[in-house]
Length: 254
Ligand code: AMP
Image (cartoon, rainbow, N blue to C red; front, side, top):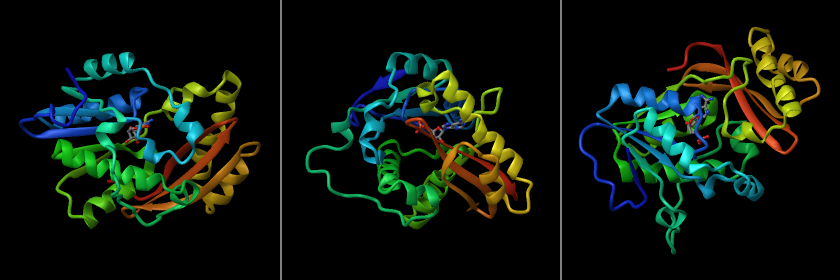
């Protein structure tokens, strides 16, 4: 696996699958690498903690980083090229053009500017890497909706693949931010997937999830349409860590 830091060095042949990540890799990321490995000639993973998508500076400062470990995980999962640019390579002096999606659901409303950062960095990565396919996790369901709409609205020539959420054995969705949870917070965090799973079959999933979340204070609980399927999505704060999760309520995710 090559580790590449500059856009200039990135020269790729064949059908490329791109997996955008912010590092602190876990089995959720690996599932995307493995899918990309089976469907493309070349697998590129980006490792870029994108400052533009952090609506809270404290979250950016505390975001877990361990490049040495990420390199090992990516290489083991069959990634060919790890594109890990410094911030100035992606946002040089004078950078002034942004892709600003309209708000879609509660996550965009709760995190002003977040999807502007996501959409902008994804368009840049698509143009830099020129992938045939790009891979995203259903865990960030509203992100998938934003990216699919971005591709459609701006006529981008890339297929968006969305893969199921990978969970720990106890049900907690894997997230780079989970390492920040104390053992006691992690136990409380299990209330989120449990509430969503229990509420999914209810006639009023939002009310049921709110009731099941007792003790956890949600940023939001909402039903979101994802390409004709309905998901139940929520965000909660456990101490200083914000976690999101969602489950399918109706239909099938593409
Ligand atoms: P991140 O590094 O958090 O920006 O995530 C990079 C990609 O991995 C995004 O498309 C996420 O949706 C996806 N991802 C994160 N956690 C999981 C998970 N538990 N299962 C599947 N995909 C995930």
